[in-house]
Length: 143
Image (cartoon, rainbow, N blue to C red; front, side, top):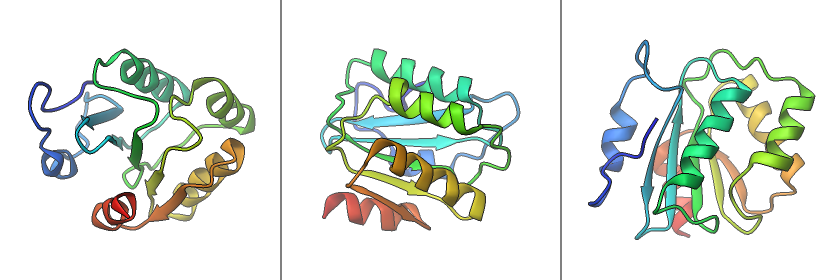
């Protein structure tokens, strides 16, 4: 798992075109420090450990700031073996973003949307929306 385009402006389009491939990191992300934005794309199976590793890598990245906005693309997720206590632990102890950050989730299925809504509720997040496309999410983040 790593940020793309480090040392230069990230190619955000490249991230959205990358397919989830076998053996690839469960979460891939780019940090656009100029736009104060993190875009993360999650793979087919998403576990609590995958999210914890993503958060650790994000926090360790020199360009990351907790006040940045996030677009979390969970539209490829097919398996989400998380239970209530997992969601609580992730929201309370691991979420690296401030409560004031704008958070956009890209979700298509009922399970994906439910997971996104649950995260919003557990974080008492006001600046949080769910979208169908990256373009819609980016438009809202810029507004």
